[in-house]
Image 1 (cartoon, rainbow, N blue to C red):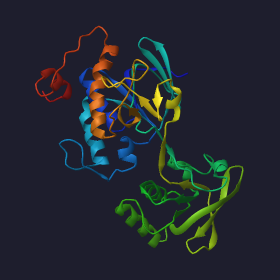
Image 2 (cartoon, one colour):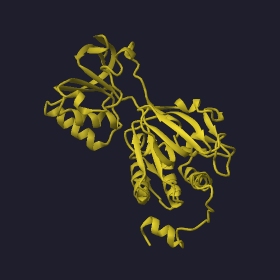
Image 3 (cartoon, helix red, strand yellow):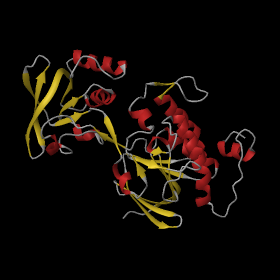
Image 4 (cartoon, helix red, strand yellow):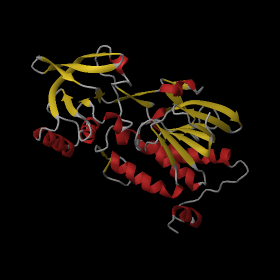
Length: 342
């Protein structure tokens, strides 16, 4: 077991609600670490709709998912949160009153007085492509994420998909792969137009191949792919020799390990009370889309409200002997000093 990382609060999920919780906790002198399974900060906003407009953030008529993430990061900068990305919480064990030992998939261990679950609809999991027997190649020559680019240097790479991830990695891996092919079902893409234009320029220059069609079969031994059988849109079939395949078919959200943490659940959501959004386990809170209660609305602004009330109750666990006096950022000099604006 690794040396425990000690913190006041551990937040599971680095989406908008988790980020704003850092702000509310910071105002009350509580430090936070955040764990997220994604390779970037921002949750659904960053992964699923970075350029999609959001119209219902109070006081902001229009903002993109990426814009909201950047604004929240700027807002919480005074509180210096620590992020642990591409990792997933697997177990939560109560070891004190209040104190939890939290372990992650990557072997990190946290000791924290408060846990805040802000995991959206659960953990993001890649959608598996409908290719027979693909499981035998996963994490050997079929990968759903790029952890280390160097792993693909000098390899024949096949990227499948038409979204931002597929286009981004096409552009990033093209210079280091010995040969790269992008395969998509149609000419239309769900990616940023600039990325599509850059990809088409590489095709025109003969630096990569772009093929319309779908993978129907993989060939290879002991988990190492050697060839992908592709059916073109005109039903003709041909082979693409490859050493590695990166299918980007999007992400789906699953409750994952949350189901094993001993929390009261209803319809795969965490039940909370509405005074502080605490779960059935004292010291563990749930905010945002992951929770449920009478009248619940799955809106970012509701998650912000839940985070504010959560912080008030969390303070009792972190500072049991310290009286909490409610203050406004507009008039409190001490809060303004924390924000660096006094």
